[in-house]
Image (tube, one colour):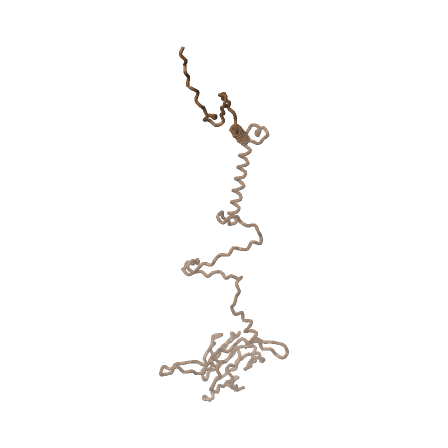
Length: 296
């Protein structure tokens, strides 16, 4: 018989195409695990633990058996929502808003500084004028308090008493160049003659310590009035300016006032005197006639 020839077996690879399968040299297929089985078992263990954890989170009959189930969870959620809504209403009643953030409960918290708004953004009244900003009392006040002037105008006596003068001479005060006089009459009788041209101002009042011309009537004030000479600039007939020293009288807000020619003069304002004017102080019946040397 003819001898049948067979082709030699092909050389096969020691490893199969799939990882993890091993073929030995004798041709027996032996599938062995070189680490891939351990990874697969670890993955399966993790999956089982995850499923167990998810199952524990779900409500079970055990929770219902111990009195804590889905109804109790819903009741707690409703209680939390009610507590949150109550807190928001309380903050709204106190004037806080959710946009401003949580309010601070510290007692020592300093107030927030609000930047000043320009005049164009100030609230305006119905008339259209901008309402003035409230005065900030925390800022220093540099306005004159009057204490320095009171200290300057204080006159002290030898016995320790002190008197504050109510009047200060203006910058335009000048000594007169004309000899002015006061003729004092009581009824129709002249009782005194006063020369009032030696200084720029004469204080008239009942306080004999500070008054230049003393008054005795009780209706007169301690510092009643002042006769003041002032340098006044006037225009002449050619349109030029000339300076003249003219006499004025000012009432120091006395109780019963000052009268010139039987008319009350305004308080705290200069009133120009003319030759021949008759001055009265308070309710006194004495008359002070204002004359100059030229008129006499």
